[in-house]
Length: 131
Image (cartoon, rainbow, N blue to C red; front, side, top):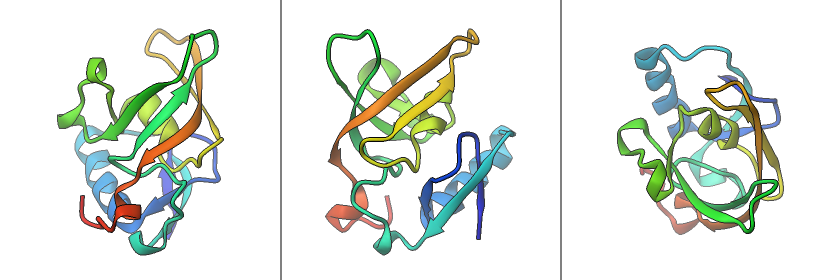
């Protein structure tokens, strides 16, 4: 079953992330979504960014990679590295793989990008299929 996602195709979402995001989309009225593949949580590849994955990203022009975790809006604390999945950056990162480059527009309209350079933690890889 395809999920509509706000960034280029070639994304993978777990069934749980798909169900939760479907609800968030309804609540927050998010639009402009494109397709993503949906897989059972136990079958997602270990290098796919899922909700609550901890990753390192490298942005052009910045001195080094920085850590961030993709989370639900109510848990977002951007200053602490917790990025909402409904933010432009969060939507761009969800479902990408290690080595992929996410591209999005900042609220100011400026183009931004970040390359995923490390997967530090993915809940599904540690056996957590319900977070």
